[in-house]
Length: 116
Length: 112
Image 1 (tube, each protein chain N blue to C red):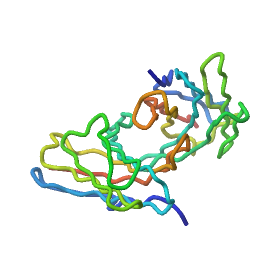
Image 2 (image 1 turned 45 degrees about the vertical axis):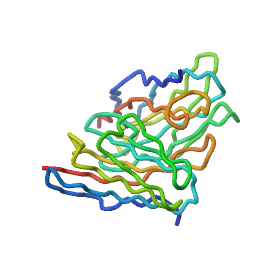
Image 3 (image 1 turned 30 degrees about the vertical axis):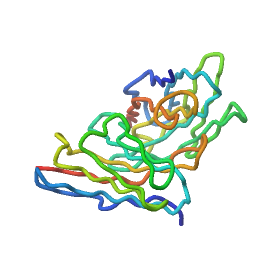
């Protein structure tokens, strides 16, 4: 069965320091992977997507993620945190053969706190 | 400007009343989804539809109903049978295959 594990429920960093949000997945096929950001009382916004092209994926707002098949990981990084990055982040796996509704499985989310 | 529109943004109802949340998309996406989000929680799937006039239950379908009469519309009815309906509801859509979901801005429902 398909699964997604976001390893930290909360991450706190100082403004201007690097951000690392960790995501591990299990999938029997060749999945697509996505990172979303959600600000309070808003919908989810797509940050970036991996769909079996380049393993290093660049997204919006300076975020990037690296797909590592050997480690079954898709960690999200940003070199320098900004106050506006404070939000909830979700890792999502899409795999048509992996179970879940329509092949989609969500992580439980990581709350990113930015200290001034 | 393509996207997903959820309305209203805030909705208040008395216990025992049915209420319908609207979701419209102009992205020409085949699949549409309804999720529920409770404070500090992730997303839980209520219903989804991959084609007009067809839909499937998600993990928490009890007390909810949907229809998919048009490709662009996927309204959700929260019935009086839903024991704890107060929550943030998110609608999403995507093209078929492994494409990403596109989300609306949500409807916050409060039932008292």
